[in-house]
Image 1 (cartoon, each protein chain N blue to C red):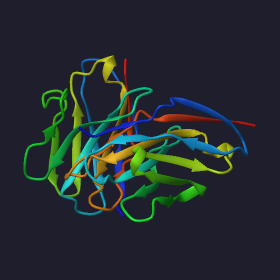
Image 2 (image 1 turned 90 degrees about the horizontal axis):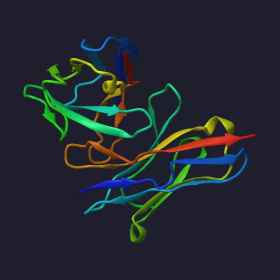
Image 3 (image 1 turned 135 degrees about the horizontal axis):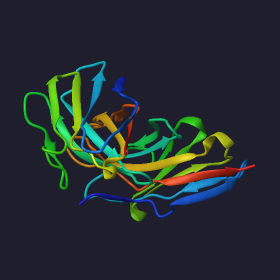
Image 4 (image 1 turned 60 degrees about the vertical axis):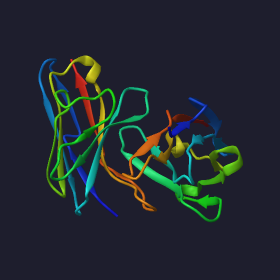
Length: 114
Length: 113
């Protein structure tokens, strides 16, 4: 199993500012995922964070808006840049379910942009 | 492309009644399927998973799910609902070799006394 610590758990931010979310895993993992859950919606994959290479972004998400760092095999950050109220969501990091194991999720960061 | 459909947005059941939450998937090969629960203000908790073998899968908190390949379904069931089961339930399929999950839109369960 994997235990994921994500912080902050919540924040209220002014529009135009940026917020960096941290995700720490208690074991080494090759890939980490960042998801967004908009109010009343399901989880949507933002990007895959690989250690030692640039993150891979899903359609509709760009690096300038959601820069990701992956400095080592246990840690990643997601930055939400130049925020607008539309960025108000829960952001979750996850380590993958591969070939028969479950996916583990952080507790999520509830972001409100005012 | 892989996808997951949860046709029911919101379901209300009486405490003690049985529950079935529907999930249909689209996937080319044998899918890895999951049910997660998200309580208000909480993270995602895995209820159960299907990878292969027995098509009836038992999970935590008294939940079970049945994989039906012919119907592309993976419905979640519980024989007697408790008030603490009120939450949002997500069905998911493993999307590819990287292990990311594709989620359905979720079903919100309300339990009335």
